Amino acid sequence: MVPTVPAFGGVPALSELLIILVILVLLFGVPLVVIVGAVLLLKLRSDDEEVDADRIAELEAEVERLRERVDDDSDERDDDVRL
Image (cartoon, rainbow, N blue to C red; front, side, top):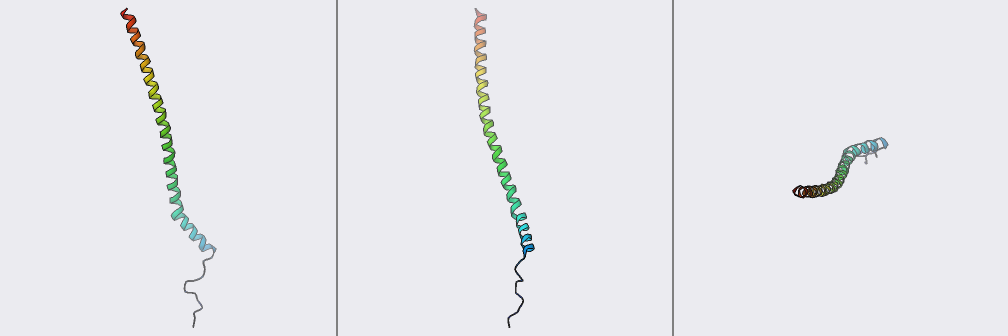
């Protein structure tokens, strides 16, 4: 004789499916969002560092030009004093 009660129970209803969905979101969704956020934050910071590096190189070149100008001006003053 075949038993009338199923071996595994019934098909899960909406409340059970919602609980399973919440558990899956907590187990996989939250860590995934945290990892993606950290990657994006690091990417944004690395872009800023490239811009900063370009700005630093530009400022160093400007400082070098100013030093050459100051050296040239001091050489001219030395020549004027010797005359």
